[in-house]
Structure formats: structure tokens, C-alpha cells
Image (tube, rainbow, N blue to C red):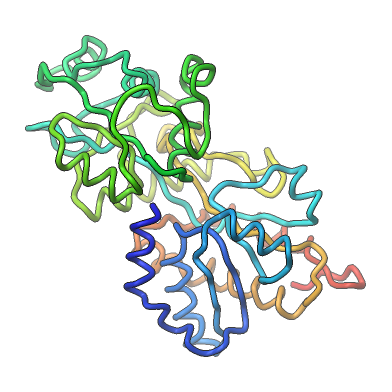
Length: 341
């Protein structure tokens, strides 16, 4: 993820941020391109700028805690106790998803089917060949080779790895107990690649390989990828509608600050490995006008930024979730406890 996002940042060249911006934010690298696009369009329409520092989720959390920015951004949601301790409000901004990218001669995108337990067994080294009986039974009529599977994983700590291993932990008790979910884990087998770029390059170069990558990257780089059985036993196509279905069927009130993981959500159309990226702001606004300006920016983005998001392969939040998010903003107040937005 890091190398891809750095390329995106260089491409944008921080255009639109030459002048001092009225709104400041910092954090997750994954959403930087869409925040930059939104900021460019918003400034043209309102004259108000945004200076977003793409420094990673940890840096964004540190900066919002130290009150050096108007909002922080994180790919992993903070837990309720952490939000309460630091007086923070959290809400999702956009979504993305992961797919299993594959390199098998004669197998095109969306032809090969997986289940969660099968993916777990592949990444644990228990399923070693593409023509394993479990895979052939799930894919009748598809000619799978008698070839060893090469597993590719992220060698660097990443939110992508957290989302992938969280999913495997939800569908495989064995994975959960032996390996677990984190930004970096000890994969039992395979070769590492740095960033989505590195994983993608390895999958392209190594015959009969499999690796997990962000859907946007798989699509833009024309990688083949498989379908995954969801919680309802269906195999939806990975696209905007199935990612939005995962969010629409999710219980966003399940955790404080909408802090849920969208993996393995119910719904026949829901893609099983979906994630959101989050915004963090202080509930007690020391600079009410700045906080109000930040909320106005995201309100505008929710109303006007969906096409810009989909053009960049991001997934906008569903309308019903946007309404819940806007309602939560009443929790940000000024010194007299009056909502600022």
C-alpha cells in the first residue's frame, strides 16, 4: 500500500495545496488520492482549502490527539474505550475491498471460486496444490493444474494485512487461534512483497501464485482474481454494489464511532472482505470554526463526491449510513456544549 500511495501522492503533486489551507488533516495513506480530489473540487466551489498530510494511520492518530490538525484519519477504527479516553468522535469516510489475486494459466478473473476456510488452508500451507480435492469440488468443470501454490503476502505491516487476517480469523477458528489478526503476522508459508505493488508484481511474475490486494489495484493492473463465498453462501461479483451491500447490511451501531470491521457481513450481495477508512475529531472543539469547516467539507463530499470516489476505485458510503454519520456530528460541541454543525 505504501509504495502505491506514494506514487499517487507524487502524481497529484499536492496540487491545490500551494496556498495555506483552511482545514488541516493527517493520517492514513490509502484515502489520500480521494481526499486530494475532493479538496481540489471543494476549493473550486467554496474557496476553502484542505491540507492533508498522508503520513499513515498512526501519525494521524497522534496528531489528532495532540490537537495539531482539525481531523485525523485511520484505516483501522479505534475502540470505544480509546475514543472515550481521548474525547474523540469517529466516523467512516469511504470504503475499499480486498480480492485474492491469482496467476494460473487459462484461469481468468472471476472464474475460480474460494471459501473462507479454503483461503485459510492455502495461507496456512495445508492446501498445497491448485488441483486439491477441496478446490476441484468447489470448481467443477474448471481445469486446475497439478501445480504447487505459491502464497504471496505483505512483508510490511499494513492495514491491508489487518483486514485480510481479520477476515481469515472470522471464518477459520484454526487461523484465529494459531495466527490471528494484525497489521503484521507470521505467515506459515509463502513469499513477501512490499506494499500492494510488491504483492501484485510477485503474483504477476510467479506462475500458480495467489496474493491479497486491494480491489482497485487489481482492477487497474488487470490482475486475475477469484470470487469468495460470502456469509449467505453466495459468490457475489466484486464491484461497487457488492461492497456497498456489505456496508448497508452492517450494524454500524454495533460499536462506538461506527468502529466495525465490514468483513463477513450478512446479505446475499455482500462482498465478504470489505473495509472502511475513518475520520477522527475531538468532541470538544477547541477551534469550533475549524471543526465546523472540516465537517462542512465531509458533508459536501458525501453529497457531491461519490463520482470522484468511484472514478478512483473507492466505494462511497451508502446513503443510509451517511445519514447516521451526519446525526453523530451533533456530538461535536463548542465550549458552551452547543453542537457546532
